[in-house]
Length: 346
Image 1 (cartoon, rainbow, N blue to C red):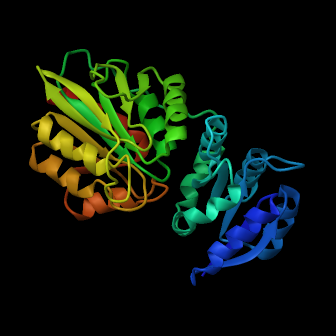
Image 2 (cartoon, one colour):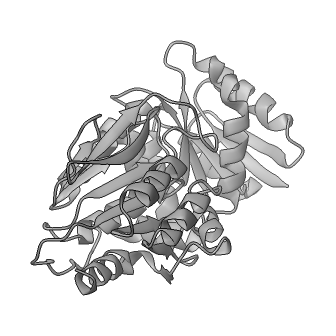
Image 3 (cartoon, rainbow, N blue to C red):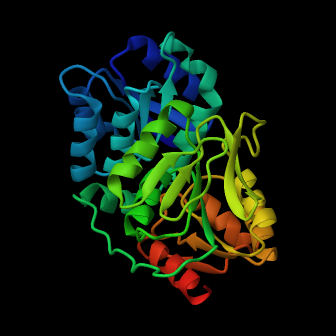
């Protein structure tokens, strides 16, 4: 049984979330709180396993409360955030502080959050199993300290393909900050909604030496550039005239996801003929595992983030289980391991 505390200033949202959780026999709502001060007292007495936390609340905003919580009593938190371009940076900040995941409230009719009941339940269950030690380390670092990887110093026709989900925004940031400015082109699929993917790409661009884009259809892959799949779009790579390009389109969901890691990795297996490195980072589920095995069969070399440093070891674990992974490494070694392999094979 997962004990949940709901923290939201809206009585309507609190009621809807209670009804959603009541529909699942594995979740029990131990209490609700209209603001962080009430929540603080209830955490002490009710000892919840997971908290759902609104961003905008009276007396203290959700970000300030989350920062205090992760410093004093780290626990799994799922943010309840309005799905707007303006709210995206705040939600990404919450993930940086240590929130496990987030759920978007519709902007026009917030009570329609009930339409996302299955997703909310899934994210709370995933949060309950999250790596709390990893979250503690994530919350305590300020600023993030990275060891930059040495420059490649020579031309290469390799590309780097990265897949991630839950916990992935911060894992990706750590990897990109360690990459050299002359890194081979990097293509990334992170499970993320459309209004957040633009802000995520901008945040990554400000954080590292590489040039980070939200990918657009027809983008030519270039050295030192990173291409992040837009939310609600599929992305794959194509090789034309000796160059790689992004293909971005509104397609069908694959493994319930759009963008899907499976779609990206399948295209890498097909187009790169072994001249690629795959990386599977933290995330729930198994999206991309089978396609990563296709990459391996095509001659690519694959890395997976280890269980100790992953917030959720679902996707990396699934890739390891099917035999798609050549080497498992901690998050702070991913960039070095990738670049060392490419340098040795260029």
